[in-house]
Image (cartoon, rainbow, N blue to C red; front, side, top):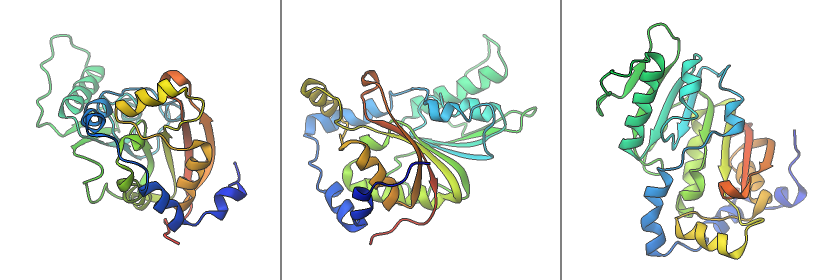
Length: 247
């Protein structure tokens, strides 16, 4: 388990969130792309993949997309709540799940108003929720694992604090949090400009990720730099240790 660096520990939560909220907003052209790009990401996250075969009981997948990180857990007994702001992606996820359980090329698609999928011979399930995670008041409670893969950096910085608070409050104490954050480390200026144009907010390296988790009541378990092809930044796994604080 990695220890929090002295630089991280020295920054108060109040000062940290003040700096986050001061992050310059995207221009209007970039902001208009954010919704479309955020809903098109569909990447298997290695830290999440470690839970595919032996998932915990209750999993929350924020920005779940087509279910690439949700479906395998549900297939192996996990009860997944998947939230996304794209009805198309949620419908795709529901159809993918049903077809994988009952492989029939002629099977009729699942209608968009189907919100819960269960397989009678399986213990797992997926409940899909259409909505913006920054606007949903509460995600649920007593989750064992929360996933936030390629979603946090798309959120307006002014909403990052409340989102992290909701993630912390919906997790059991000792529950796990897996996510990714885009940062400007190792990126050339041309790539930085491209990332901003498609609606991604770039933060400042591994230290930012540690600070974000620490002030939100998490203890870092592991952190790893992502390849440039995925937009750089870091993947992380953390454990809930306490409630978030403003101090």
